[in-house]
Image (cartoon, rainbow, N blue to C red):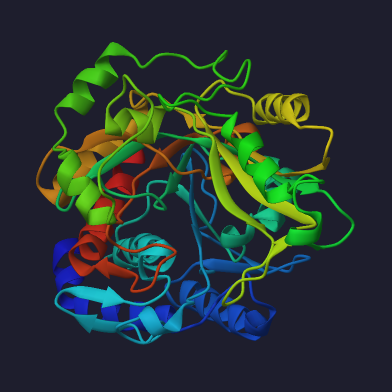
Length: 450
């Protein structure tokens, strides 16, 4: 009955996903506050239509949708997380279809948020609908938490989870906000990297100066910033900040063996990214660098004249945005302190250094050997028709640490996105096969967790 229901309602599922993607629910831009609220209301009403109890929680920011089944004694608690907010669509001129058009073409749905994260969390919603509609009682006490601030830091949800931790505690937490290793290759993600951020500014003269009249007599902040940042890494791709690697643990032998079996081609990988070649820390493969090694990255650098033509000045200031991706056991606060000490130690006295700490989040790691993980691996294989792979993820999901500390359940990362889905970039899309198979996977997983 379940499979028949899924086949019979496939076209409607797609139409509803298009409706969801068409909301320009951009959390970072105040002009879209009304769109965020409209999208939230649509999600809440959809949960009501399939028979769940719904509460829309107001926050200092954007609202949180909580939808749940009645609590029955003796059943395990399962929480499904997702987010209805999306990244800004700019630059508009690079989109081949309207960013909120939800155009379906060649087996894909195109639009901002199609894969990150509307299509992914909506697959779980449709799975629950199908189970309830075919009179298959859910063998779990189920709660959905769908937030509207993931793309701007999840501050409201973090506070919400801490305040309602006892009520929300679950034995299993299902999240589809990661990716698959390759097309048609189901993937279970058991680790993500952490993050620590800061902004550095160097001030020199009190104003921009004529480089002919004053150049050579005062420090150039742009030049000094470039030199300062260059002290943080070496030619072998190693971070040179003292203590940076102290807590980093080597990869387990089983991980190295498993990753060597994954299909990988460095030339095709570089070509797909438009890069001349791969590079990074000496002694590690591309996958190991992406998933299991910490980094020091300059995300942006500015200072001096940026307009057309030339302007011969000694700039008054220069600044850079920095993030470090971290691996399990590294403390974001300790690493940030190490970076700050290093920068202060190497900054010349000819400029004034200001450092503004930013957001941070620890790495996440859970071995893929728990009961929930085993259930997820079986569900993925049944839905996709081949054994899944177990991988780490190079990105960061700050909410995972909050879930781990306050909700305490086994976290199951079963992503449905692909590397070319263009998250945070123009022309975002989602493969419809992944959406449909994600529905089947979710239904199977919920039954197995019960």
